[in-house]
Length: 152
Image (cartoon, rainbow, N blue to C red):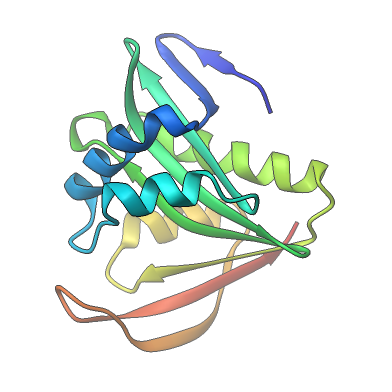
């Protein structure tokens, strides 16, 4: 997928130059954010696909997907707190799903904290269903997670 523009928000594929911004957003969104070096390494992997949202030429959100055999795995999606509730996460999710379909992937999965109701609502909107419970999936704070899946 190329670049998608809507107003002042631009959705584009993530690149190596985005590692620092993705790391920064990760620290705002997750208590267990990846280190910048980990993000940079993952960006270079052939199975990793990142999309970023730029607002006024600044990366304000990202989504990390892994394309594994026939499955799209949503690894992380993070939006700067001030930019939430603008549909950015939805656009990033949709970008990854569209690319996966073009590449012939047939399934999608993700893990989400059981307390992250806004994310669950978004995923359900896009057809993902709770498939199982993963006990003790998260730390800081400790929380179980749901595995959600769908056919693409």
